[in-house]
Image 1 (cartoon, rainbow, N blue to C red):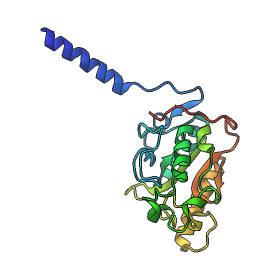
Image 2 (image 1 turned 60 degrees about the horizontal axis):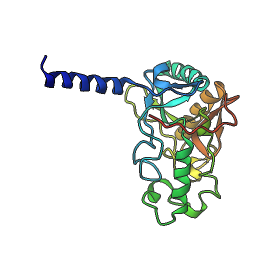
Image 3 (image 1 turned 90 degrees about the vertical axis):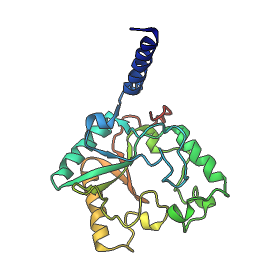
Image 4 (image 1 turned 45 degrees about the vertical axis):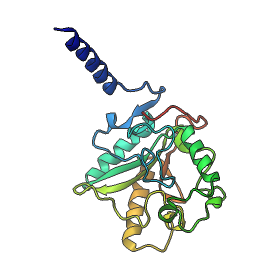
Length: 226
């Protein structure tokens, strides 16, 4: 083996090792896909399709992280839905505190409204804190809160919930009446199965659930999603 070939093999080895490495998570946390391989994950803050319109601080990959306790319950929900040819799709799980800080900085810049028409058309940006769509601390940073919906098992198309994920407005409130009966039925399906497995909902966001008796109720983590 000549010198150039040796260097190439060494570099390739380091690259392969790097791609296969996972960060060491804090005790009690897991990469969810390692426990639920068929779970559909689209972390919206690892991209631009979100209310900020940019990748959010702390999101370096599309890898869903949750506490092991929350993951175990989520697996039960996925298994039960699959009996109806349905599946879960997750938009966010563990969220670093630095991401929440990014939201706070963004909210204070009243001139940055690039995605207002899509995500908060009827809410003034200066009122996002007042109306509790954004907060200085998030349950997501404790690792047992998840944002999700239900999709068709054959097509992967999300059930119609009456408003899109992360839409700031009354349309996203769980008990909003101005949606169709079919949309109400879909919301009720999600609410019922999540509650059955000990996830409580945030009433202003049909997609937002927190595990009851979460393992870290007062700890806000800040390790990155990578």
